[in-house]
Image (cartoon, rainbow, N blue to C red; front, side, top):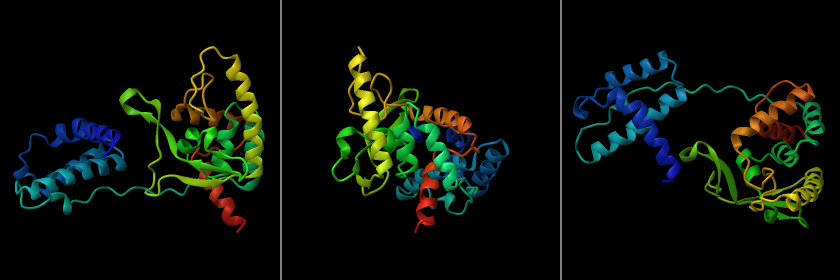
Length: 252
């Protein structure tokens, strides 16, 4: 288990499970008591996703209790956590997508928007993409790392190995338009790098003015500004990935 997952577990246990159920002896914990707690959390405004996170952590702990014969059964097996809503993702049509890219061309993170919309990359994958990951002759990008907020360091961006799926690294074929944007961006970045007195080289395609990783939490702010300038209806940055998939389906 990763250190980031351990941190997430610790937060849930410390902030939610222990204050609510820590005083109840495990042998006296009943399904009714747990269900009442879930309902109480929901009434107080806790998101269904967080309640389900608490449910998973509690269930894992109780499974250990059953294994070591501290309790006879796991009460979470019969408790019903709240269902997660499944909203239909908002996407743009082809005309809106082109309008977005027209404005995004002049943005400092122009390659990011092309990689999200035209290539369907995840935000962290695009932010972690390096120049050395590109194969210019084949027109491909090899995704081997991501950039994510570090919860142990106030959300500061950190580079980590790509572990979103069991397949690990994957290769994406890039469109002609994205490759042209990358070439233009590379020349501009080289000029900024030579003029900078404190450049930190991570070989990142999308980076700050000092060469360091872009904080994923700042992507939404930049995205919203472009959307507003383009006069488009609001979708989320992740909606670019859904828009990409929709356009692929439309074109067979």
